[in-house]
Image (cartoon, rainbow, N blue to C red; front, side, top):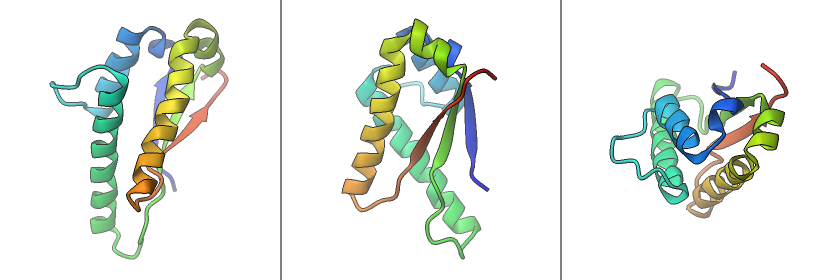
Length: 116
C-alpha cells in the first residue's frame, strides 16, 4: 500500500496559498523560504526522513515506494492557477531527478484528480 498525501488543488492557487498549503501539509520548518528552491530542499529532507523511517520499520523492504501526492480539483488548479500547476509538475520532476542523480529512489509521485 502506498502512502498518500491529499491536497485540495483549489488551496494551491496563488503563491502565498501554494506555499502555506504545503508548509501545513508537510510540517515545513519555520525557516522555510517560500520559494521553489526552498520547496525542493525541504521536501527532499522530509521525504528522505520518511524513507529512512520506513526502512527501519520494515527491514524487509529495501526501497519503499514514493509518496503519492494526490491533488484533488486539479482542473480548477490548472485553470485558475496555471503557474502553480505547471510549477508543481516541474518541482516534482526536479525533486525526483535530484534524488536519482544522487543514487536515490523516486521520492514523490504526482496524482492529479478531477474533483474530490
